[in-house]
Image (tube, rainbow, N blue to C red; front, side, top):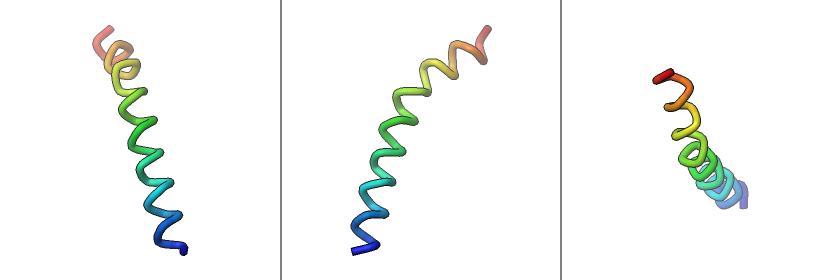
Length: 30
């Protein structure tokens, strides 16, 4: 059960990271 929850939270984290990457890239490039 814990492993499944961990996998779900991990995929959610990856999703948010992919969404934030362009924003972070813009701030870093500037």
